[in-house]
Amino acid sequence: MTNPEAYRVEKDSMGDRQLPDTAYYGIQTLRAIENFPISGLKPLPTYVDACVLIKKATAIANGELDCITPEISQAIVQAADEVLNGKLRDQFVVDVYQAGAGTSHHMNVNEVLANRALELLGDVKGNYKRLNPNDHVNYGQSTNDVIPTAIRIGGLLALERSLYPALAGAIAALEAKGQEFQDVIRSGRTHLQDAVPVRLGDNFRAWAQILSEHLLRIETASKDLMVLGLGGSAAGTGLNTHPQYRFRVAEILSDLIDQPLRPAPNLMAAMQSMAPFVNVSSSLRNLAQDCVKISHDLRLLDSGPKTGFKEIQLPPVQPGSSIMPGKYNPVMAEMTSMVCFQVMGYDSAIALAAQAGQLELNVMMPLIAYNLIHSIEILGNTIAALAEKGIKGITANRDRCLAYAEGSLALVTALNTHIGYLNAAAVAKESLETGKSLREIVLERGLMNAATLAEVLNLEQMSQIPTL
Image 1 (cartoon, helix red, strand yellow):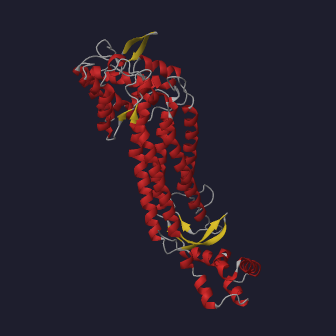
Image 2 (tube, helix red, strand yellow; image 1 turned 120 degrees about the vertical axis):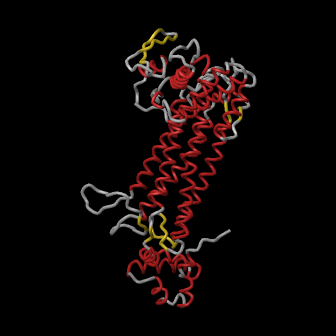
């Protein structure tokens, strides 16, 4: 049993350092902790999963190819499985803002797996002559090909675990509200001014369609993440790797995450270009922009209760004011906008980092890794929360919607083809000045007969969207 007061000494190319024997990380992680006390942000769990899955796959492949012994391969795989099952998660400690390319985090992973594998072999932490973080856990690998692969794997995991289910749930919730509110007629608004009548259900269906199209765009962009540069080693030449390694490790990783991964046709290109991450990030930004628009629409339609639109009621989920009793705010929609603004900011940072590579390497990958995976996860969590606590509980104020629709001056638009644009404009002007209804003025001026007017100003027909 480990003595919490005990220490061990580890050595690297810069000298010796003392570490608490309870630590599974090693000397290079210790140096990174000291060098980068920057944000307090630690690697995202999904990113850790991605890195450990790579180490599991590489250990299996290198064991099969006789690059490391079966004993060492099995110990690394067992250590990786323990981490994937939730153990030792507190040992991944390097700040997000760290050494370029992600070397510090990469060595953190190598050291934790090496030291746990040593224990599983009945040995002690730090006995790197038997099982070494660099020579065994990292055999045939480099930060330069592992980290871009980890961003790919982490992105795919986050999409499958978080964003895709959230989008599917939100689309279903919006479709259900579209069906529920299909008979509710409200005044459309353009430029925040009265417009022709629409159906509240169609608003929700339009939002569902918007999210469905974003889902397709993101799925298309994510295909770029399935092409791996793993096996390129330090510079894309595959130095110190077995000829079959890159093919076998892609097959193993494909099985581990149930995705059709494949080696890149040009390993050097896959290691240098951050374009796949920019592509996915831009599709997330695009989604975020429409989510902001939807959240703002929900807030406007719920505004009031006495001095706003109040055509819908968002479900109250918490008191809205520390001073005004009985106030409820559209907090889920507000939260959605804030998260989306953050995603847009992350996308800008990813774009800047992606163009900042030189020659054989982009050293800004730690920033890209955090921003991309975090964007996916917070967007997924946000959309899921908005659907569950916001959209599903929405009710319609049917009478208020109808009153606005019937009172809108924009109804005069339907008269254009019957009485002409200038006559219609004169009717609208008189209605606004006198308070008389459009119907009343048209009949007074003898512009149309009552039966035809009733047919033309039929709100049910005016608000019907044509179908393909």
